[in-house]
Image 1 (tube, rainbow over the protein chains, first blue to last red):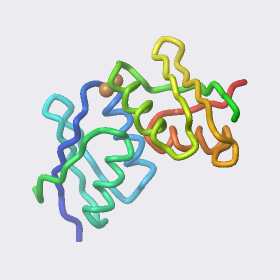
Image 2 (spheres, chains in turn red, orange; image 1 turned 60 degrees about the horizontal axis):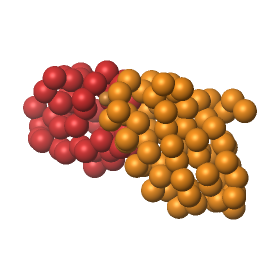
Image 3 (cartoon, rainbow over the protein chains, first blue to last red; image 1 turned 180 degrees about the vertical axis):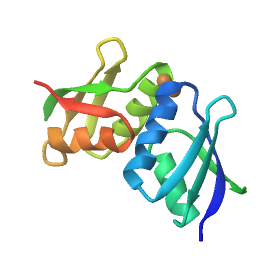
Image 4 (cartoon, rainbow over the protein chains, first blue to last red; image 1 turned 120 degrees about the vertical axis):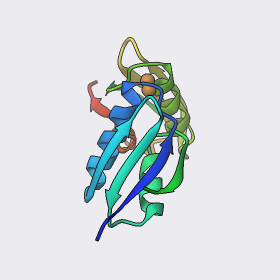
Length: 69
Length: 71
Ligand SMILES: [Cu+2]
Ligand SMILES: [Cu+2]
């Protein structure tokens, strides 16, 4: 069973969203959508939200967990 | 101390540059880092008891950018 989670990630351009895409692909076991203009990342995964948040923070951008979607 | 220039792909603007400089620059054993968007590289001065070119390239890859050891 997977839940969809909403995260804020302070992305400003395609480079940022590209970095987010790559760290999430590297993590694996996730399905995600990136909304660059609104600085949101929607992730569907069985993984813990802490793990997902730490992964997003690897990009060096500010990231916060907003909640389940 | 050693210095290396690593190729970095995937950066598109100043905020990409800044996030790499901040995150890699704050790793223990990294003395100085300068990232260039135009040249697509990162010049790093580091303590070689902490890092190797490979470990630095991996740290950049870990952030979601491509890093190439060119030199
Ligand atoms: Cu960006
Ligand atoms: Cu950028």
